[in-house]
Image (cartoon, rainbow, N blue to C red):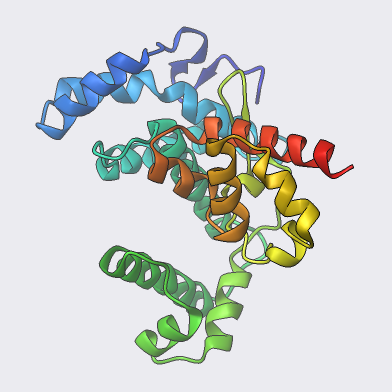
Length: 257
């Protein structure tokens, strides 16, 4: 798949690349209904789709099909992207492209999940997104189960049934300098003072970090925020959050010794 030049009648060796300023300008025009800008923005982000499709290589899937499905995810990301948030479009789009491809693979998997279980899982996802949008925070399984009038065990089972196991170290995107891994987009709900501030020595080490590093460590490991959430809150990219986080952890390890 990685050596295939033409996918779905698209010559991948000649895909255009948009600068950050061009992306911002086109997104503004798209929100005003400019269809020509929309088409140009889609073409300028097909490399993003290609980078996601390539990670599904080796499964015997048709590259053309996956690329077209990935483009559907890209278009959905464009339609739902909020330009008022200080977040890179690629950071927002990659999970949506991956999700679209995974849904396609689940629906076409040889190991079939029963229709009723799959339908419940998709209803759960829809209700979750609806409640998140309305309340500004993710609902609990109990809240979703109550909304759908089913048991929380049924909710958990249905979601597990449509999931493909993946490694937390699996990269989801690489912009040429920094990779974004699945573990970077998973909310950390277990780290606490017991792990990061076991004693006064750790607290003293924290004081040696600069203000931005301290803030990111606090939000990531004390508040349990994802890197994307931290990036949106403080107005920098997820890649920058990742770099600062790694730098802070490195400093803490050296000070801890």
